[in-house]
Image 1 (cartoon, rainbow, N blue to C red):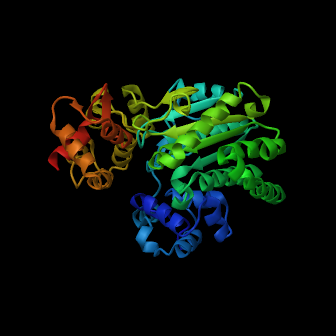
Image 2 (image 1 turned 90 degrees about the vertical axis):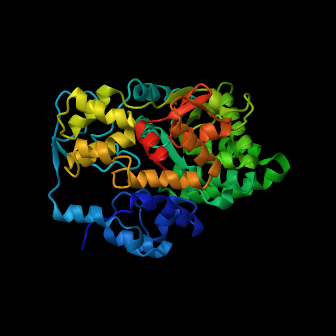
Image 3 (image 1 turned 60 degrees about the vertical axis):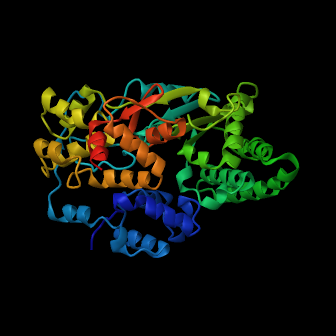
Length: 449
């Protein structure tokens, strides 16, 4: 029987949606249903290998047939081929210290593991974030389109902070059930629940104590308002139980933009808490990391927005030297010309670059074949491109706009909301009030469609 199996990349969002539909608001809720660790649920939900029996139990709980979502092609590769090895590249400054002398190729999907030799640092971003998150009451904002490495950077910030003795909590709003966004009361109570559970960890006594205090305290919400009730819970109950700083990593916060009744108040609360740290010692314990694609098309009062304070980090595409270094890590001894052929089609887009290098390193395709087929239904990006196409077709105004951008030989002016939604999807680059395709791959594909 196979030892490990994972969810297919194109099924990950479907699985997360089914989890919410089945009433599991948090990863740990799903994990506890089958008596497993939260990390096991995280791996399952994000397309990382889990034990076959665990995979089967998750499928049973979520009412999936294994064959509906399982990545059998990867499973077959695992058991019919010897793992391809890559020799360590000596004196590579961007390699993590934990790199072993050899390593297996990694399929590029989701968050890059902390010990992965395929994570590309973008100096001075990482070191600056590590330094700033240790400052009392600090806030970091990580902004970039999809597939640019936001989750991977967040994971490293939280890991570094945890190593410094801080308590870290990661909340991905994409995993929150729809019902929690129905009103501010439910949302903030869920938010406090989630932070409390993570802070308590395996201390069940502390968890029960805090949750009981939270439920009792929350009754004051109708009198004082739920924003103040949330703030007071942290002050009166949560912070007194911890001696270390608390680092909250809030991922996919732009999902809240779909809920005007929530996002204005919640973002105003985050800004207020950040300002509180300048006046009151108790709030110096809190450090925030916000991760999002773009906030530009959402009207937020400048004095109540957390998007114009703290350290702003915008993840850019890989440079030529970084792509060449990454090719070497895949044991591809490429010249500058070969690197330029790749980046001429996909730019320095991290996901697109890594997928090409992975497939070429596995000898499933060569560079010439890749360049010829990449923008077609037979190319290695077919599933990625079809997913983007499907998203655009569900919003005709986005589809029409992308067609216009791909067909034009000069930058195109678009309405604000459409411009920033295309940017959030990673499809376009911004040039002032105008846009161009993010890379030649997207121009070719959407022009032909």
